[in-house]
Length: 208
Image (cartoon, rainbow, N blue to C red; front, side, top):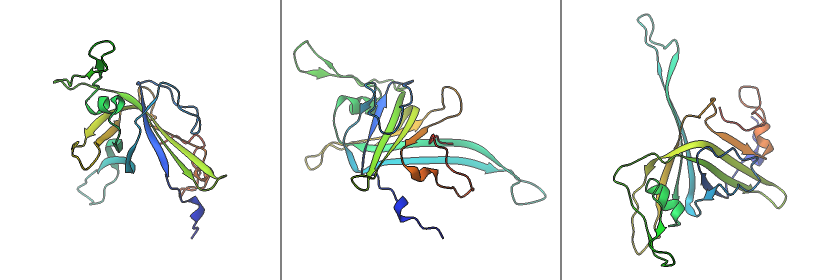
């Protein structure tokens, strides 16, 4: 057994950010995101949930009960979080691209319309998280998904005993070109350690 407690990572803090579709991949995991990106702010202590689901079906045969091969039928990559800031960037995504505008110049009163006809609201997405182990050992991770759309919204309950919460699940869309669904950027040297297959993870951090 090769147990390495020093490789345990704790995403102590982070944020999910959105940008217009087609926004280029960030340069690395440590540089601040360019102005095109908007952070969605505070989220509940559950943080962010990443889910990757691949479905496949085995071939069936007269002569044997074991599949000869598997046929991949679907793949889904989702990013979910529950946001606590009731600001335009969050509300707009929750309500399918809704935008607020001032009712009259200088009125400081705002209005938005929720469309009766749902429509696509494609974005680019980044999830950043940092593990600060000590003053000198700090690791940054950044997941970049060039094309996402909200696939699910959680019920928002408004009460006097809890802040308003906005649960959103983003699903990755097929790449506009090539085969890269998402990119993982990091300065954590642990990702270069040997994998069970005998190789090492790519230095670029790109996902399969």
